[in-house]
Length: 313
Image (tube, rainbow, N blue to C red; front, side, top):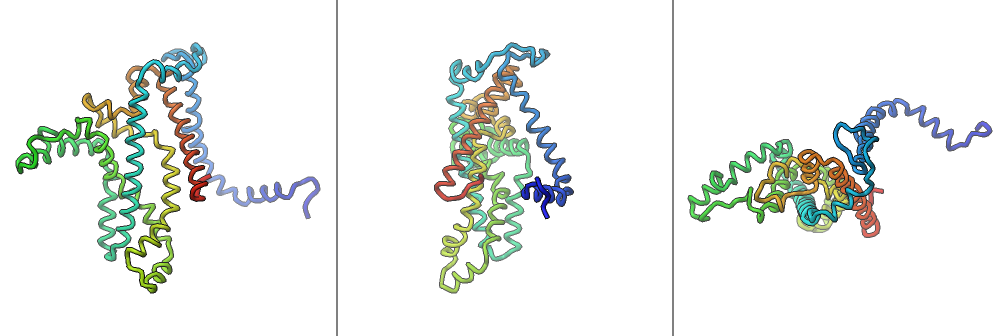
């Protein structure tokens, strides 16, 4: 019997809260960590709207409004090559990484010798745990113009007359960064697709085989359609990171000869914030990057919802 004045829905919610109190208690530390380390620091965005200098109380600094935001587009032409580099590298990396992981998962699933497939998966997963400083050291040792092992070998064999400067020549910068990203993350990204393949019922493959479908046809009409919902969700989630670059990667591989094609928004924010100590300007650029990323995520989500019926919210 329901007490007078108590709404049934509220009563059910109260019971669920009491019944699952231990689960909520276990979740509480994670919520507190997210709040403390992700939301509390957002109060620092106030720096973008004041003339802040270290040592001056933030609330005592002179209010400048949107001056820093406007200055990004009017005072310099930096935004042209910054947006070009960031979008070109990150969009290409997203397409290359997802395509490689998608195809690799399908091919790995087709290997009938399970021990061999596990060996390949382990070998391709290993680069994910290698730090970018180690990758840079290996790249320098392998691809340096004067002392790189590959360049020296190709010159000795007569394949090329002089070494190819992959680390410094701007013509190769984008391609080299994308290739390194694919090599590092291919095994890691393929895990999700491999899991999605394992969730596809084996009855579909058995029925197709009875109907005379060969291996390629089973991949085309069963495996790929079964992976598409996962690929769409990953595409939506990763679209929110289009303007975010791997800072360590670009910090290590950017030099005086290729910086015009390697400088991305994250490196630009670091340069103005921690090198030039222009905290308001760097904070303003970071805020713009955050809001634009959020807009991109929502737009891609809506496009996916209308085009495929799949969305994350």
